[in-house]
Amino acid sequence: MALMKELTEQDGIFYFKGEKFSGTAFKKNEKGKFITEEPFKKGILHGKRVNYNTKGLPIAREKFKNGKGIYLEYHSNNRIKSKGLVIKSIKYGEWLYYNKKGTIKAKERWSEDIPNQLEWEKFYNKKGIIESEMYYKSGILHREIYYDENGKVFKSNKN
Image (tube, rainbow, N blue to C red; front, side, top):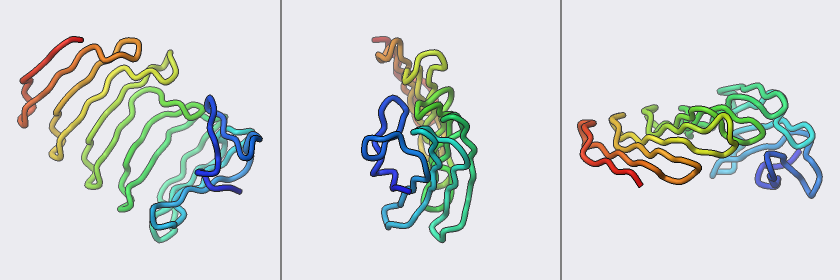
């Protein structure tokens, strides 16, 4: 057993004291309470990952096989903070980010062909209305679109 902060990650593989980690790693919140247990096999997430609320009760279980699975993170009020597919700690496909009230605050699209390649991201205001969109080519910002408080385009440019 180990704390997640004691592990180091390199190319999607987690190590503990220089060795590929096998066992259960734990995450703590800012108050020092355990909030997640993550199972590893040969340095890769493998098995049932469990998220706990502030009272120590399970709020979600995710299954990982050889590092692949849907990854969930929670706010202290037990609402989903972020959600998306990971394969060996690398984000793929669409990721969603929520505020503490459960409203989407951002979306991202990660390449399914090129690891760690962000394709686009969108940001939303507290009411869930789009504020901006950013599009990338080969990891470089290519296009930006900005919206007013009603969701109407007021500025757009290409880099």
